[in-house]
Length: 231
Length: 108
Image (cartoon, rainbow over all chains, first blue to last red; front, side, top):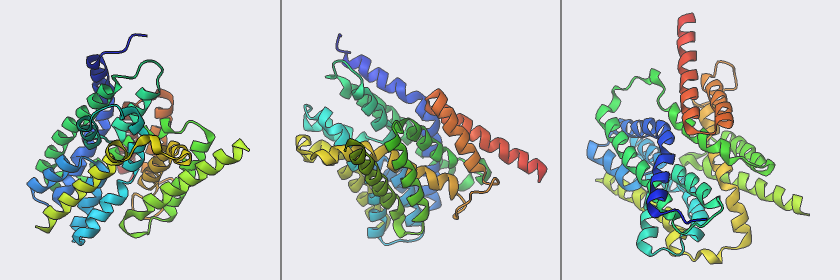
């Protein structure tokens, strides 16, 4: 099979994100509104987004700033909800090991849940993979540019958005769109159900720790089922 | 000023976590169990994010039929499963939620 060109990989990555934008644009808007609602200035809300580029981290940081948490608590909260990036990073790293550090640093800075999911899928396909980092860059850049535009719009709108629109629900829906295709085996399903149950049961834990406890529980159950089936 | 320090800290920690294995650790040295565990990261983390969004939107666990977000979320899951795209999830989920809110507003 002919190796796809960098250009066609890049454009395919961009195109693959177009349907995703329907979810991430309202999400970015909500994140912008939340930053202003937390008492940040417009410059602070936009800087948070431009430099951290993570919807969940931005929302958590805004919630913690809003209740005047100590700086270290705000940073720790964003750190905890971003631990999943550690796992994404480990999953894509073997595919990117041949690139120089600037490429890897750039892709790391731009990586989100959606571009990770798209990239992991692209690398799982058969055929030559030498130019697939361009696919990663295409999807990640498309999300970055559209996300920042949505956040700026949210910052400009501030607190004027009616709660009745329930725009924050678009955030949950974008994660449903990632979750459903991620559940492929019974072990995946068991991991998801256990993680969901722990997330609900542990919701009272401070600093959004429930997400981490639930994730570790789900991963543990998945590993246990895998080990049991192999005996 | 403290908000700016928090923003810098959040930006630095999200970058370091993303860059961890891509930039700082040799990917060929991953232990086997770790690579096995990676497979279960997406279903676990995503389910842990979605579940409270559907079942605890009001702050407390709500399994009743009056939880419109649960109904809308289930519709979105079914649509995603059959149509396999993000557009389906967001469009059907938001449409269901708005339709239910509108209908209950008319009834109420």
